[in-house]
Length: 162
Image (cartoon, rainbow, N blue to C red; front, side, top):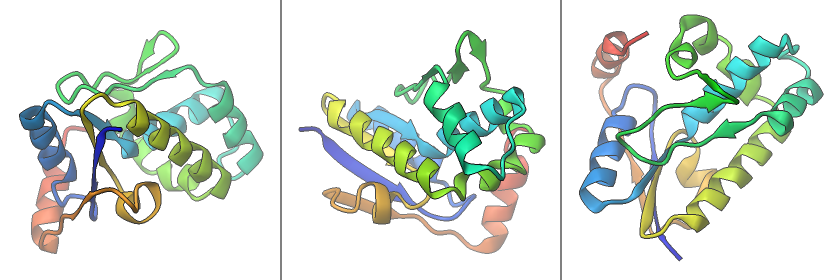
């Protein structure tokens, strides 16, 4: 079994930056769970699914051909043959992610997938995102909650590429 490091915290607290750096240093896999929700949101929008309809969103999730990048230096996200790495960071997608993430069955199925990836990691894996330390990997031997002042978080979010 691999070592799981669960990193949680509010938006803009540095979860991704810290998690990638630690993954590189330890030669661990890296999983950005927030990106998975963004990818699903993009796929739903692309398919014309009603984001308020849990069955429709779950249907897209179950049929989606999504490759999960686990290399902290190669975070290219694909749905089928389409590279959606830039598109999932667009404001249109960012504004809709919560509509997809609010569905209980979506969270259950994505969390199961995250846990399965953690079990397959060779040495270890850094899993970052919201609810990671409480829901996805509450028994992880290493659990980190990153925080930052609100001004710092806002500044970090404003500097992120769109």
